[in-house]
Image (cartoon, rainbow, N blue to C red):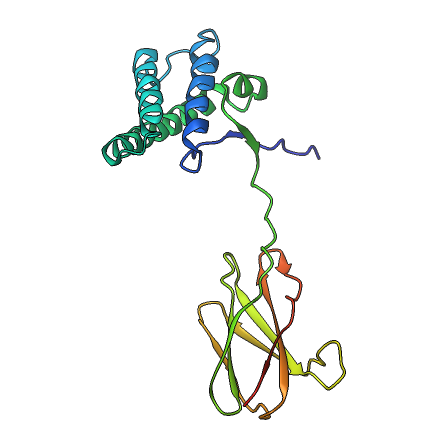
Length: 214
């Protein structure tokens, strides 16, 4: 059975682009789409309209570098108009190209195929350890975007040891801001580590952070 070819797609979201990147994209797409009328016929946005928006964005970006608040507000307005125009044009180009990679590439838009690969979570760690009650230390992990679960591992650090001897692991929901660890022995130093679980699995355990229970 033949394998179905992945559908070719163009990038349709431009909000994360820097000002300079957005200006460049407008120029490249202008050359790509409007510079090849034999490939891109009946374009949904007239060239005159696109060119006017390109000039408005470029002018606003240059002026905003002085830092004036009103000028920056105007630049942000032009950014919004430009990203909406690019997204609309990208959908139209996809329809015209009909999954033809050379045509899509010619348009100047960035090409992607299929769903983007899932990225592993960034390493996490212990944000802070706080003790308010005898025998209890509250563990706050660092925020980890994309995490579905956090795991805390802790154990007493014995005299002369270079690493903790983990004895207990606790799983907590990421929405829980801090987790109290109870039943600790006053006068004993405990080491805490955390790791996060996401779509690609667990992160590595973080570096240990130690605190004496009182």
